[in-house]
Length: 273
Image 1 (cartoon, rainbow, N blue to C red):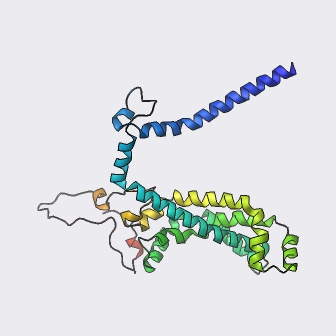
Image 2: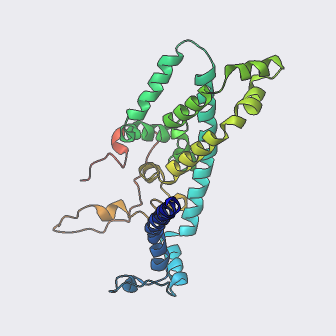
């Protein structure tokens, strides 16, 4: 009786997991199917359930309209460099907060944690002004540098390293390890799970970033995946009738900015006329 009950529970559990797995995989399967059909075929009733034969054509259209190969390469490059640099900054900062005793450590860490509750939109104007002063507008470093010291990353590494016994570090110092070698040989090996979690978080954070690259990137050769082919700002502005319209020269994606741009020069903050 007990064996039959156990078998019944196993069957129910397996069936429930199979249904949940199917629910998770169906959107990915539809993604593949939709990529192989034309726009008209996707909206047929009933919709197609098997892959079609328009994959190469759709990929070529995507490449022609959005330069997707270049855009994908840009996102991979920016996200990878950001993950390495921000991971190093957050790990070193977390180690300093966790294992070093210095005056003002707790107030400074509390001030850092306040950054978690500050909306990112609040910092857009001062960051844009700083990038303009540094003449970094339209460059990769304008996307990578502002968020290297990410508060959540520092908090994650600080909490992970706080669990490391201080006696382990003291024994390393007694054996003659310098601080850099101690950090590399003693502290980092036990932190591999935390480092992996931090790397995944940082990569996805930069990969999915939409607003900041939209503001600072100005050339189509540097666009990223979230915004591969933005429309011209001139095409999104309302037009007004004039008695004698005059031809106007085509406008670029963003206006020209000098190194002393004011807050009103930020394309994300200037109101539309």
